[in-house]
Length: 183
Ligand SMILES: [Zn+2]
Image (cartoon, rainbow, N blue to C red; front, side, top):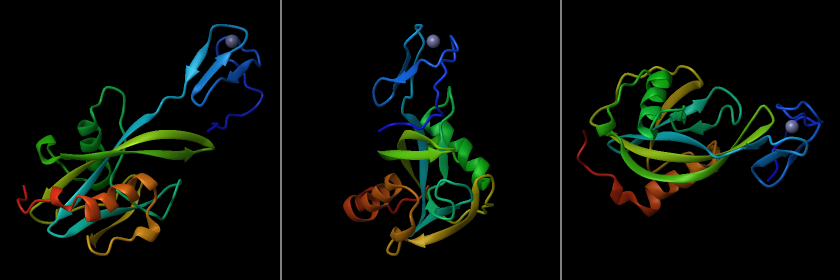
């Protein structure tokens, strides 16, 4: 899978048009020692559940503007998955969650195209079961939010394959991971 970078491909170190893609993720200069690895990025998403309803957010930006997504996002440098997710939940929803309220569910490979660059991501999802619906505000890159019955999730309008797989596992393959004991 190639990534799309403008051509000619100038080396950021020596300035010559000698940067070549070597394999799926490695770029190297033919004139100097510069190399760059377009490594997979980590993201974290929350399966926020109250009784039998799941919170989905409508994406306000591309890619997949208008489609349903899990709240969450890219993990920053020096953050754990949980810390990144806690920060994103506060930024997107105004929701404060402790790491003890996050139960690891699973991770899924995904692709995310932004400004013509294709990023490969590993999306990790955490279950967050709450006893009642919190007061939430759609902010940042979230246009709106909606609670959906776990029996009627909008599988025809989910933003990413990773989320689609995760939701499928949640409701069909591993529903036992949901407990009746809310935090
Ligand atoms: Zn160079």
